[in-house]
Length: 159
Image (cartoon, rainbow, N blue to C red):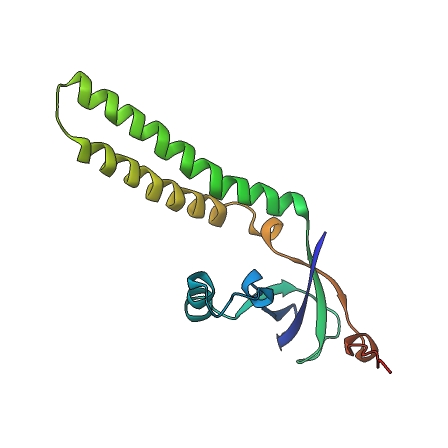
């Protein structure tokens, strides 16, 4: 289970809204000021993400919670988002190349357009499929509400 700490931002009778900080690997890298990826990550990426979770017990705004996401869920969605579009792009590009050769067309641009169209189309189809599928299985699960003592970060004093 991959765990993350979030903060309750809103509470209703049946749901709570939890906000988490988005962390990138650039935060701990020594080259972040010289790396273009670090600069792009700072300017483009949003810094927080909010989840609406079912919860009927007592929670208060500002309280920290522990969220969890099963590794299998993360691996499955990652494989779907990374592998399927790549395979589709290669298959459609290969079929487009064979078709242009069979029809004796000199259209390398047709192969490029077909490949890119299949890439974009497969990303769109995956996002639509995930929206219609049971979205609860792809949402983090609320593991526990943290007590005020658990929310404190222990600091060790070095002599």
